[in-house]
Length: 283
Image (cartoon, rainbow, N blue to C red; front, side, top):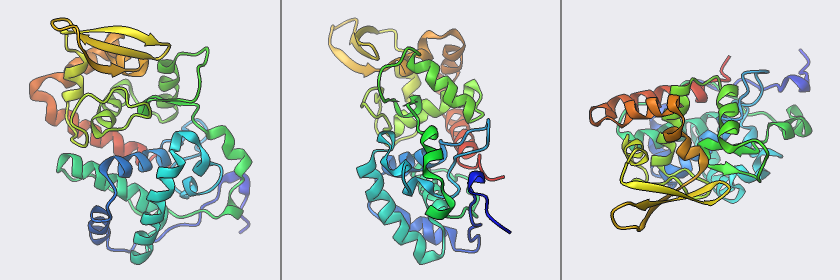
């Protein structure tokens, strides 16, 4: 049967390998939780529910143009993929599976809970990839990673909402993913990192709703949070961070996750939303 390049063909991957041993190897490879999670997100979050293109299956993040996109941090990406490719090949796993499993390992390390994983992704070749047709998948903004390529007439938070729609995410899933990714340390600008990096918890939402902090604009997409009692700058944020406190619907969701007795719910919901994105193209 002939492959039609416009269908983004992917040769099916191997499902029969030792997942637990592969996870152990990934844990000891020297990559940080942030690097593991951010690479998996970069690979999977290109999925578009509108036309079913993109996603982690195929591992096209290692090919042009995706490995050159600024949002994917090319230097960091190259280092991560080199290590994961060597590790995955030892166990007979595709790089696509290894990337997603590395993200699973990162999330598990951040919360000490089991994260579901579905194997079977394949690795697409350059001959199976029309690189020019993938240019349109480049994220010009990714609120989940606090990335904005340049200023646009559309606000960063609206572009984040568009990305969430393409990923078929609900408002609650979008909210829990942004808060969780910030606690893991994912932010292209460094803004919105208010908690101990690498520990998945609802602390980010508590900081967001802290009434002792007064926010002031420092740029078109940047803010300083100053303590009302001391006047000192205690944190920085982007519009996509602060919309979860300013928009009434998103704030209501944030308030649920910020409750002292809802950390377990936050972590559970993050894992569910994370798995949904990772498996979005497994159809």
